[in-house]
Amino acid sequence: MKAVVTRVKSASVTIDGKINGQIGQGFLVLLGVGPNDTEAQAARLADKICGCRVFEDENEKMNLNLATVGGDLLVISQFTLYADLRSRRPGFSHAAKPDLAVALYEKFMSCCRELGFHVEHGEFGADMQVASVNDGPVTLLFDTDTL
Image 1 (cartoon, rainbow, N blue to C red):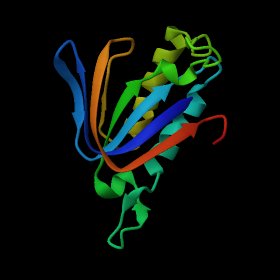
Image 2 (image 1 turned 180 degrees about the vertical axis):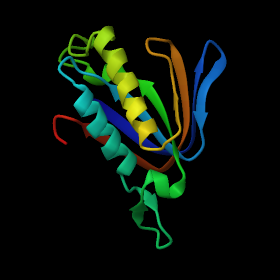
Image 3 (image 1 turned 120 degrees about the horizontal axis):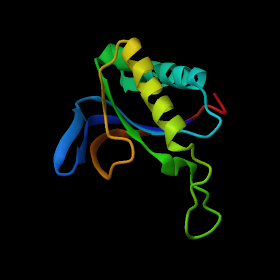
């Protein structure tokens, strides 16, 4: 699994002109699933992201995690993280098929909820408009192959 995580002041996702999910302070998570990914990887990724200490403490040091600041998550499915970019037109054959991708997308969010976090989300496969107010900006790349 791959994730692009941005620390945000706020973020929202709109589908067909209606807000489907929105958060205040927290993480916007763009989540991609590969064909060999597992539930164990989804759980590990959720733990790593939710425990990541990138919010500033009273000394302006990145030392606080999502729980400490009372942050939420907005999770958006993002198969394009598995794009093959060798040609000018990206290929997406390295992304998981929808049956596996949906299950692991849901598993990831479930794990975040089990860790005590409020999770908002997009709709798998939908045309979504994502808005965010990046904080910092702080943007991190996670890949379960290297965690």
